[in-house]
Image (cartoon, rainbow, N blue to C red; front, side, top):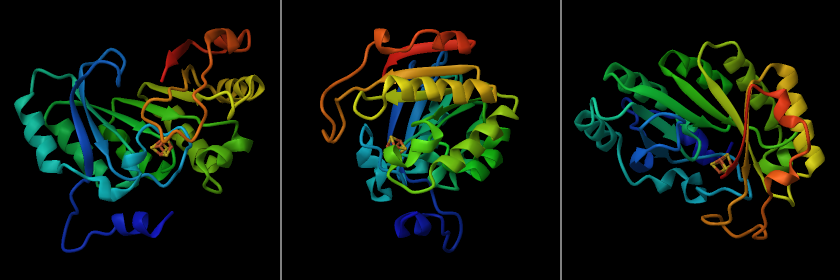
Length: 241
Ligand code: SF4
């Protein structure tokens, strides 16, 4: 965790407002089956080479305030199913839990996109959550190669346990760039998830647009997926990230 991330957890003189990089008013793709607005929160401690929101990795990317989000939600009561907290990594800010509670109290369903790096905060946020999408970056033994942060697999394992013990729907998803994960890696991820009882997994083919350009503009196709993996899950999907 960088000093910037430690500082973002401090609240001086009261509750620190949520740092929001941007708000998408309407989305049908960020929460399957729901019409939701998406709040992209600033800050993420990891540095995945395919990050499409790398501008949001720093807390200083905040452009909008929590007041903006709730003013927007206030006007959209009855018009939206819910709000998705995305990022960056939403749980990098403890105050997202209070924001979720507030949105829930206003009558909105609440979704969360997370890298799984904050299992305790995820547990605390559960009472206000209706759906979670959690990234699975790599086989457990290769995690740090993608996140470029030491010890990053363990909190994700714990987050998965939190979700498996909760009574809300969630999906796991893996972004696949051919230079980062081999078909064998993909098969290993599938086995590791299925053996823990995960029922929903999506492969998201790498998309070059919006990244730093660090990786080659290559991607993968459904025919690259090892045979039989879809049968390990109740719901399996190959999608463009
Ligand atoms: S965890 Fe997500 S937001 Fe953070 S660097 Fe990786 S892809 Fe980007």
